Length: 117
Length: 110
Image (tube, rainbow over all chains, first blue to last red):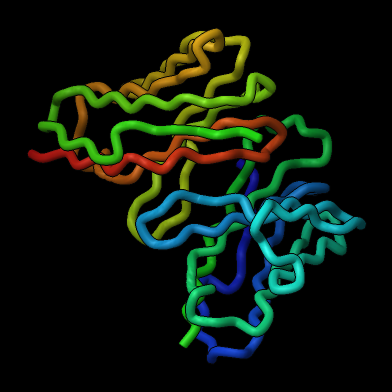
């Protein structure tokens, strides 16, 4: 099946620093990737839709200047958490669908657990 | 936008019994309804899905039903086993963009 690789799997950073998370589709091209956030014991919440070659679309309540998304190629999207604070500590996970939309499911990366201290 | 509600939030079943999780959605444009299983600390894994032109789908011990008129869909797990213990999420949407239910913690006791 299709593989989505997310890196890093976990990261600890100091408050005020920035963290970059990568989402790669390894064996298919993804014009669209989605970024979700999951707080402990809560559901996955869509943060933004990442479109290759254009600006990301953010869900209501998500600060676009804080969560920078770059989708520079058909296989890579990055999420940068800028000036991270403890309340940004969460499980971030991406998903991707292929160019033609033939695959009827979104494939998830393994997720990144971010801890801000 | 889409709003998905999922019930129950926790479900405890005896090994061998059946488990049923129910979800409702609000957006009639949603045409794809996947179910994910998430074990502690791991990514969600797709276990079964159903499209809007199908009313029921079965895969071994797992089945999903969809009532498009009423905008609800359900997950059925038969002959539950301890390894079925996990959090299950329903989702509704289209083209890979989903809204997820709040999740159901399923505990299967031997």
